[in-house]
Length: 204
Image (cartoon, rainbow, N blue to C red; front, side, top):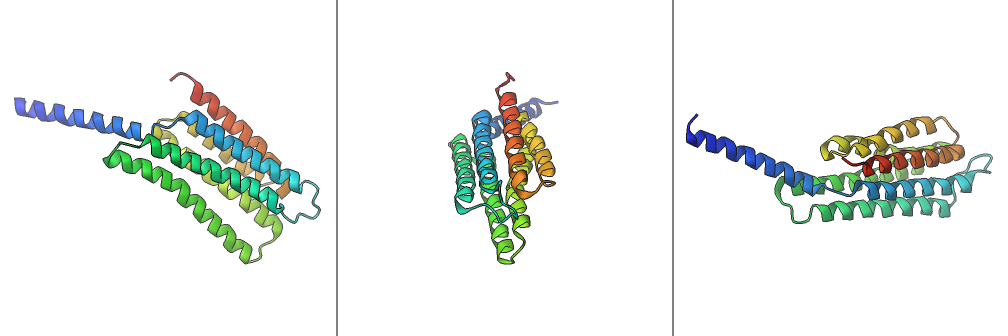
């Protein structure tokens, strides 16, 4: 190997190392605090839904105040996530910056699409019990999917733990009636995000 070839190989390796470091920096978000925010939002929101519907027979759906609690909590958690990721990616350019932007857009677009779907289903007049289940299960499954998909690229095993437990919670909750399902989701979220925060705090 000539000196030029050695120089080229070393330069390429150095460039690769810098790119990987920039990508990690772009997505270096405080996992523990974000998980705590989402855990509080999902747990508190679904407890409000359960409390508001626990005595309904037949089920007619949560009142506006309970939906506002859940929607407001999820919106706040989403804003905190986008702002946090945006700050982490500030000052980083190129592929790394785009990765951070796409991660933020994943949350915004997926939840936006879910809301549009729920509005369309409501307009079609689906049964209250079915709408109640879907309105709770769809956002939860979105969070689980995004966390599972993000765990490896972000090097954050805590996201994988939360995502896996949330997926199990979603599948389990679907078998209960809408009111009790909200309580199951609240408990599952508390356990899932609590486990994720514990993993995130462990020394790496």
